[in-house]
Image 1: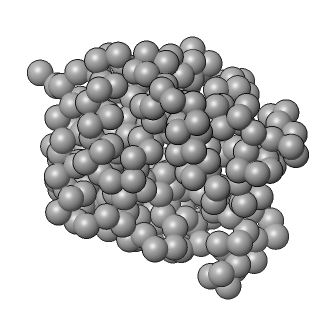
Image 2 (image 1 turned 30 degrees about the vertical axis):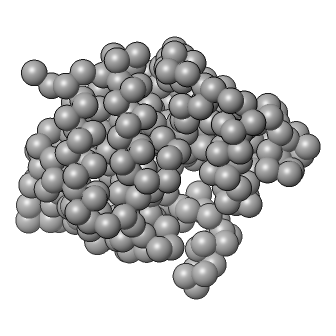
Length: 297
């Protein structure tokens, strides 16, 4: 895929007003960013519905689910949807899938006891269905896993085309590339805010991080990376906040993106933290030259 080294992740792609989402997608494509990513969670549109909105509103940019939740639809629906978009928009759709988080899965009435086994079985079912479909994507739709810990990263290496980690610092990218080896796509998300005042930047960052620090998968991953319990309390220590959210001037934020790329990432999905889409586009336009992002043509 022509995904480029830098893309954009934004939660409002999945729940913002559709006209604004279309306008923003076209604007980001016009700036030259290589991909649009979004999540699937309570309160968002279905991941395939959001994908269709973004694909129809753009001409070249890759659209990636980051992630489509395996507990929301069965493997037959996931496989068929991925192939259908790959066929309709060749080389422009990437399917990121994940096991989500225990509290969210429990709300849907599912058992989260063995998420790794659930993902493995789900991939088996997807593979079986894909081979039986009467239509096909050319090139095949790439499949990425929302992988944080080593065993899920190993599954991403062995059963997928790569990994799309979320809420991770560059040291996780080092670990992920070591486990994935050469070849599989590694596309971490990176939250960013153009704000040079430390107090204000960290206030914005902590507001963004608050919900994620309540989810065991993210907490356990940070502990695995060497952060302590004291880093995870009271909204996160300055050390953790600065690791998860890149803040400062344009060059400081661009340096964080380069840190991921130097650590082995193929692509970095920037999540600008302004709460509105127009504010996100403003920051992305400011960042683009320092990131080497240029309009196509």
